[in-house]
Length: 438
Ligand SMILES: Cc1cc2nc3c(=O)[nH]c(=O)nc-3n(C[C@H](O)[C@H](O)[C@H](O)COP(=O)(O)O)c2cc1C
Ligand code: SF4
Image 1: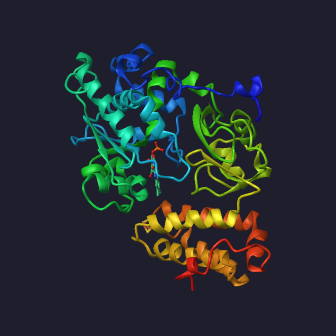
Image 2: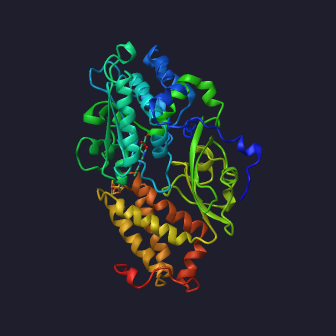
Image 3: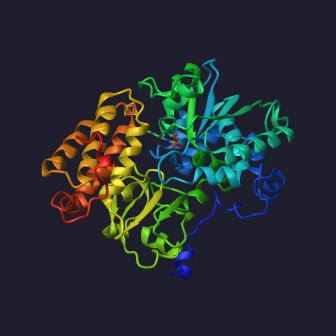
């Protein structure tokens, strides 16, 4: 196990995670003792437009995967249009490897509730929803309890803290479909329909929930709002890099000594994160990893010093995504890992568009053939050709994301594929598992 050096420990910047280890951090009494609801009091004295400007100035970018500037998104909500406005928090967190929003809601649910109230006030919404993954029963319980506590203390409901502002907040549990994390599918699901992506334009900013102006933001994005209101834009920008400001929760999993959530200024490297996490497990050497979940192209050992911010990861040919850093060693097979991810995308494809529905179905079958020792060289061209027909031709990001590990594993680890095809690697799948592969 590696012991982190002081200079690496200094890379930890606990802002969203700072209360997680406090006793009963999820209860309102603890939260109030540790700065809780102070930002709300401050925000309610400000003009909503000034809050939107503050978030713009902070450079906060969405924590849900795409990194869209949050203040800009809030600014798209038309004002004085006479329509109801909605804030919808995306707490679906279904991306394989991603584990930052559920721990946040479990350990510090009031941070999200306070962020929701401030964000709703800024965009002039009087109703907000938190759409939480159905399986996350424990987190949902904590969240519902926090919402009730906030109502009881006058932070939610009518005339909040005697400001004249009203807000109702509803926690809605989904049914556990990955596609319902895609913002427009989420809105359909929230309205009671089958969760499938909507055609855009029109965008949720003008035609979102119940065809009204809606902001959809990730849990981490909204939970970042109270610290920005308290600390100011310059303080927030003092962490991170020029275009990727603030701290970020990196979820580390896989062949490391201490998996978990590490909140660091954006731009930290995997080398530093590994040091914080105690290093690779004994007997394992880093071989490949995802910087932002299974929808982001794989990176290899040569990318240990890539700055993990939006620009740095893009320059290395991948995507920062949800900062779900899944770490694999020389004892793991990139072909098999990619196959398991594809099984997931195939299962979760909503079926609305042909490239994703059919392409993932066929790619799973090609992988089964290769992994059972019956693949051909032509299969590799078929995989690339299928990806070419999915990427950029699918209705939503699920299809694009499914191709990421296929193309990147073929780029960095083609030899592993050839070893199965040419009989040097013992097949991972049996003939029985091959059923339906031809
Ligand atoms: C298939 C798919 C699944 C997604 N799942 C999530 C999710 O679980 N949580 C989330 O915040 N964003 C998810 N997104 C991204 C959302 O569509 C949206 O960009 C995000 O909620 C916006 O919030 P932000 O601006 O705060 O990042 C997903 C996107 C796709 C294409
Ligand atoms: S890309 Fe996949 S998940 Fe997205 S709409 Fe098409 S079939 Fe559905």
